[in-house]
Length: 240
Image (cartoon, rainbow, N blue to C red):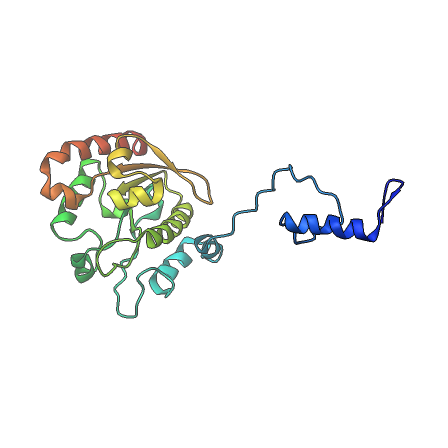
């Protein structure tokens, strides 16, 4: 072996190799030169299960309704679990999203039933609407065993909801409560209220407001003033 014009004997080469071995170098790196100071290229983020699932979702609203009514891939799906699918008019310009059916909703077969539902109807009437002139849906059309979302199910339901919103393409969204706000805006209800937000969808951004759900207002009537302020903000946009 030679380095430049100086011959290197077998004993010298063995000594050099032993030195590197003692230093901890025990693997041949490669024959080609490499710039070891160059930053590594960032690997593309792997597609999530939610992203992959979104590619397989129906691209028409009526077909998506059928998917919600029958798919066994939805969070909390089971053969005996009741499903409360969207209702109202998708062309109304106003889509309202609640978190999931309550036990009473499942028994009655309607979202926002009972006393909370009657308060919801009065809230709609206050802005000149009723259930036939809004598009009402849930983040999950099925109820979880404990009535709550895990972080994983909330993420999957949010991906599904964004696709749904993109298909419906409302002029504005009204998100009821903390779970919807966190899932779609990444903010708790208390921080998100009082201003407009954008929800990104495959069809473009959709404007959204967050307000206090009727179930909470029943126990905290003083909060109705805040809910009314939210509805006034909504009214200024969707009925102008």
